[in-house]
Image 1 (cartoon, one colour):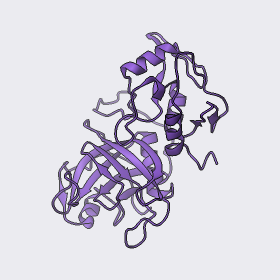
Image 2 (cartoon, one colour):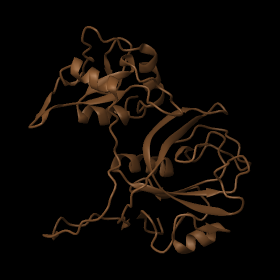
Image 3 (tube, one colour):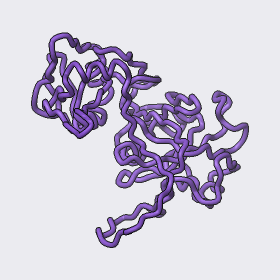
Amino acid sequence: MKFQLNFGHVPGIPVGATFKLYKEMNDVGVHRSTMGGISGSGKFGADSIVISGGYEDDQDMGNVIVYTGQGGRNDAGKHVRDQEFIRGNLALAINQKEGLPVRVIRGKDPKNSFAPDEGYRYDGLYRVESHWHEVGKSGFTVWRYRLEKLEATVELYDSSSSPAPLTGGNQAPERKSTTVQRIVRDTKRSKELKKHYDYQCQVCNLRITTASGSYAEAAHIRPLGAPHDGPDTPNNILCLCPNHHVMFDLGAFSIQDDLTLIGIDGVLFVKSGHQVAQEYLKYHRDHYLDRVKNS
């Protein structure tokens, strides 16, 4: 990579700033890629993306964007092969894993009511809430990313090709406004399910006990919200420890219809009174299971 990644707002460039050409964005550091829609590295993450109607599977809902990864198209812009989980596609997944913000730039697109009439516009920071793979409109596998807009300030920091030594520190750190990017939904049904399992993980049986009580997390098998539109019902929810929740969301393991685990050893424990819908298990396998790791 010939440039250094900068995650967060670019000093001096306000949200809403407009640009006529890619080169103008390159010059001020809002988007460093000279042509591609994803500016990033498969090692460090992506610091910015451009959405401008180039991919037919994109969905722009304003504060939520379902973004299609890169690759798989010919010179005419037609999908002719499956997208690979490399480069920018891998970079955006790293953003989700590491909690890194990504700058979103919208380009002119007559089909998108959120796009500018001309050129490009910087529309602020988004977090990568989830990523998955599916067969796109052209019949080829595409990688997709649900992006959610961040309202709080995220401080700018640089990536480095080599990690800094773990020395120094700050005995009196300054307080700054930041954003915790991993959100754990806790709906009424989720709370009821966790109580049903007495806060024990259905994968490893771990119950985390704290001074304020037991702790577990509710994992929706088919996610809530567009484009998945999974239901907030007990048959679509699992009670998991934080480790297995993250692993499940990132596709490190999935679950067969007979409740045996794929990717790790074991069988999902299901307590009497809780039915897990096979259609949602299949949805998770088809969209989230890391098929490279589990092949």
